[in-house]
Image (cartoon, rainbow, N blue to C red; front, side):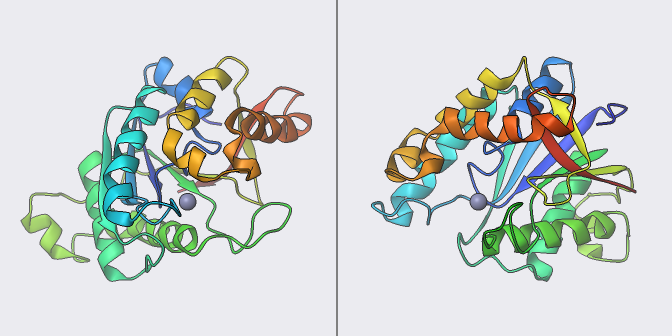
Length: 235
Ligand SMILES: [Zn+2]
C-alpha cells in the first residue's frame, strides 16, 4: 500500500463493517501518525434481531465509537440513513460528497461493494449501495456545480482524493502487514460486544478466529505475513 498520504476517510454502511478486516491496518496507520476518520451511512439499528431499532441504534453508535478508539480513530460520524434499505441515490451521494469536502482525505477506504464476496456469497444491499455512492461522491466532491448547496454551506470542492482502498474486495491488489496490529484490530471488533452476542453461534461472532482466518488467507499472496488486503484504485 502507498503511504504518501496524511488523511484517510473510511466510509462504511454499518457499525462493525470496518472492524471486520480493515481496523488492524488502520491501527498501523494511526500509530504511524496518520489521521484516519470514519463516516458511517447508518447507525446499524437493524442489526440485532432481539432488539428494536430505537434501542439498538444508540447502543451500536456507542460500540462503534469505542471500537474506533481502539485503533486510534476519534472522529466518527453517522449520516443516519435507514439501516437495511440504504439507496445509492442523490441524497446519499450528496451526504458523502459533503463528508469528503469536510474531511479532505487523500485516501478513501471503502468496504467491498461488488455483488459478491471473495469466494462467493451474495453481498449485503447497503454495502453495495454505500460503496457505489461513495465512488460517485468522490467525483461530486470535486465539482463545484454538482450539489452547489454544499458550497453555500461553506464546503469548498475537494479534489485531493488520490487513492481508494477497497477492503474485502474480490479483486485485491495491495496489502498491509498486520503482524504488530492484529490485537488492536481484534479489540476494535470485540468492542461491538452486544452486537457480537446477538449473532449467537454464527462464525462471525468469533472475532479473533474470524480476523485471524482472514489475515492468514491473505498471507500467501503477500510475503507469508498476516495481512489486510485491499483493491487499490488510483485517481
Ligand atoms: Zn455491514
